[in-house]
Amino acid sequence: MSLKPIADIGEFGLIEKIAAICAPTIKPASGVVEGIGDDCAVYEHSPSSVQVATTDILAEHQHFDLLTTPPHHLGSKAISVNVSDICAMNALPRYALISIAMPQNTPVEMVESLYNGMAHAAKLYGTALVGGDTSSSAAGIVISVTLIGETSKENLALRSGASPGDLICVTGALGGAAAGLKVLLREKRIMMDHVQNGEPYNRDIMNNLEEYTEAIQHQLLPSARVDIIEFFHKHQIVPTSMIDISDGLSSDLRHICQQSMVGARIEEGRIPILSQARHIADEFQEDALDYALGGGEDYQLLFTLKPDNFQAIVEHRDITVIGKITPKEEGMTLNDIYGMQIDMKEIRGFDHFT
Ligand SMILES: [Mg+2]
Image (cartoon, rainbow, N blue to C red; front, side, top):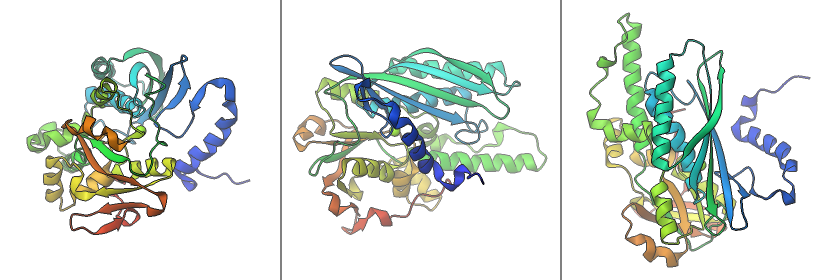
């Protein structure tokens, strides 16, 4: 029998197979509310509350590059991206477990810096780092973060609750992380050329990145929107569905549409785009809209709301209504700034980073 490489079925094909093997372990009485398929797994915690759990792996060369990422930032980001998934359930983060595998020659100072970054972020989010594991690795550093959060049953927001007429909202400004990555990759190339020419490695040869600080910060140090969840809880706002923007507005909106069995119409002119992302896109002769729709890693929240919640969010300067949920048959469309209605399937995928 010839064995099939994972590459043949892709990440989603693999997850499907794994989910099929795992599903029979979830018995009706086990208290599981949601298994594989949302930002977090959800299970009953008390008669009125649930816990939500998520885990993420960061592999060197695959997800991060120590040439462009200071370890302190990497640690902070590892916590933030997991907390962001907790937020996507309308829950607050509580406990984290960190596991790390690293080569024997990894400098102790680097590992300390990494954990200091994690501890710094954890404090900001009110999360306790309570344990984990360490191991050696034959090739590169691998970090795994598991985060546990809590919310009441009434507050829980899944991806599957959106219905036609709901408002589609997004927090913050998009495109910054993708634009920042563009700049960092360009700088890395300059540095690699320099090293290949036989000149010594030297961080100083990087261009002055000051004018890109905000975008680079969005890429290296994203923050999870715990503040938005606190705002929701304080004002008793429960989104009908929610996801965090890790892959880009269009694919994350597609997840909501597929799991809620609805369509969506968004207005290009209303999508909040970081102004520095626009400048960087101009410099690269690209469109900042592509960064927002497909760039990902912004870790803002995308959610839907019943229209009668509009008054409760309209004053919030960091929440923007970008469109409306429609019946499934209408598909996913984008009204561009010229008034043309574009099928989102036809929008060119964002492939600058693959
Ligand atoms: Mg997510």
